[in-house]
Image (cartoon, rainbow, N blue to C red; front, side, top):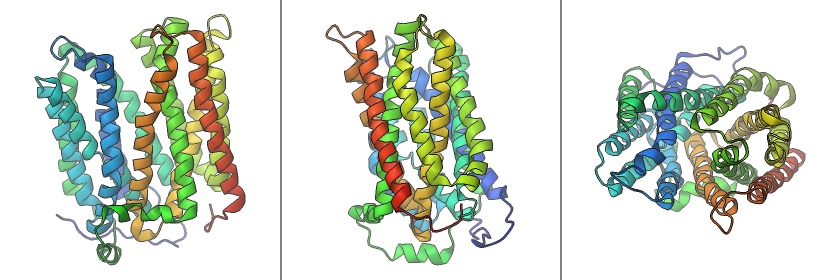
Length: 422
């Protein structure tokens, strides 16, 4: 595959241009990839539950869970492969795999084939961690936080446009969004093949290739106590956030009587805040006060928001109260998530960025598999319905998990000295 020449990055260069061509290309790659991913999320329950497949609620939940389980096992492996063979081929293969998974979903005529499509998508879903490693390759440590913030903005923008596109395309057939997502991923892969340069320097790639090929070695990054603690904080954050995500639609439906369209507006509102925070605010704030402090601030806001969201109701705060609480949630996540990712990147060796990001995203995938399960159990009462008590215990459980993450983030800030200027 060509071009093979690594990008010219000088880690200590002063006044380095941030918006380089490779960074812009990766931004577009992530954005398109997340549009496809976002298109599947809102349509999958309706698709699997239709008269053709007749999936039960449990089976629909497993369709979401199996994707995250596959990512949990395979993201660090793909990350390690990107350290050995380069970012570009792994990104290319991941995007082709995503396209295949979407097409299998679209042509499926039995429920097992729907599961197969999700499994394929999860196994090859390493484009996220590999793209993060690419950003780490093409940015200096000084600009690393800004690059991860830009990554988060692409993530948020894709999640805004994806569900909206799925709603429009589903009018032409329940299969159409999957075909569109598959075409987007395939075109994305072809474009990446021809225009994206390799970012991993040959000497680093060769050094990585000397390592043993054991799966257990994938988790060597966790031997670094700083990286291990950061990964634990990130895992707890994603678990708490996933509980909220699984419960949010049922909460607003029960409390406010909102339908899918109104919930779509709420998710778009959260996404817009995330884009503004991560794309415009986070990079500047990270340079002024540092990623560790931003992680703490983000964890504080997330803990508060998860605690107060269940109080929002037509009788207490109304829509304004709900918008305020969800704004706190969006801002907190937009600060804490890229801060932790940037800190983790700085605590990993330069030739092991792919493996480190893969391990971190693998933990996040595990959290996304566990969180909705916890949320589903806590939301159900003895009649398998939602009530005020189950709403409070679900969100307060998420707040408690987030509070533990906050305590760990404070501990990290007090005991770990950043090795580079932020």
